[in-house]
Image (cartoon, rainbow, N blue to C red; front, side):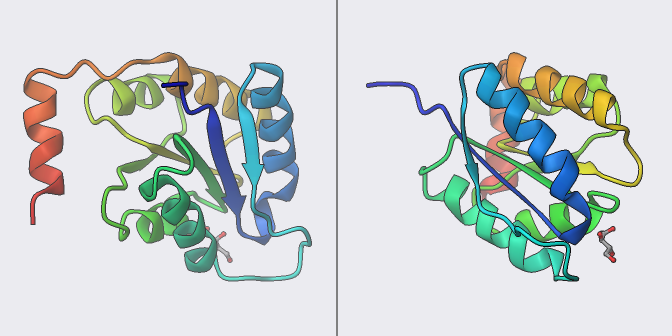
Length: 147
Ligand code: RB5
């Protein structure tokens, strides 16, 4: 089976510029960016965009999701409402690595107002380059999924 290299990206109105930078960056790295908008800076509602991105990850259409809002917090909360989604907000690279290694995160949220663009790209790299370690961490990730 071929590896799923699709990453869905979305944001609210605050995230267009950073989202474009991340799309360019991950495309350069060989990922397929699935950018689902929005495409204008007109004020919009982050829960809609967090859920839309999360649905594409939960369904298996996309391997990962990267979502942005002012703080990253609101859109992360919306994404985590979708079953099967494990999304963390990261403003430094250590957490971005750890949410993959220990939490098997399948989505990453970044705050546009808290994180500069250069650091955001480093955070994306840390997230994408890390591997889930399994073992005791799989037990715990499974506990998150259990109803
Ligand atoms: C939008 O005004 C703002 O609330 C949003 O971008 C984000 O910070 C929410 O968590």
